Length: 195
Image 1: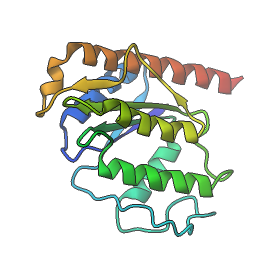
Image 2: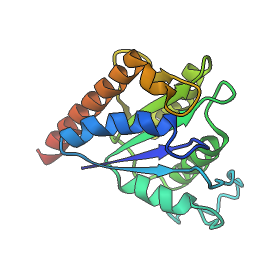
Image 3: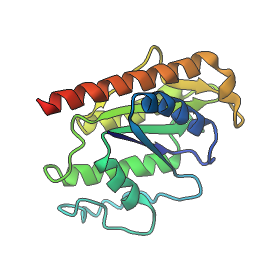
Image 4: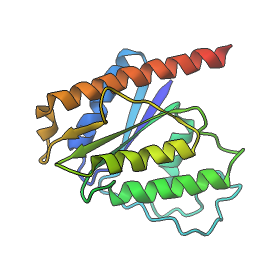
């Protein structure tokens, strides 16, 4: 099994990456392969609403890294979405990615399938807006008929500067618990699929 994480932070290997790697540690302990794609340094263009993706299994536009990331998402068993909170919601790159992914998924129902995959969202936040960010990412999962893994509290960790999230012990414990829950859920689904 494999979990793909998409890090929507503008900062490579920053707080959002720390959160994702904390979840990954628990998934790796459970024998689940992990990969993180960081959108830092890239620009994901917004959806053009051209509907040309219908029947194509991916977006037809090739000016950014969307197609590569989307292909990996479709082939993963689980997906983690991570975003910092800059303006009371997800980052612009994450918003653009999710809008395009949602349209490609909708225009290719029956050809592509995220149904019954496991999803989890995490947010690195200085103060406010984390719930809106988590909700935005979870809405993508729910509209794709995915199963959302939860934890003991909202999947947010506090910190402003790179590395500050390491001081939020409760938040990091929540990330570890999220990784355990996601691993458990993935294995249960795999067992059910074998029947």
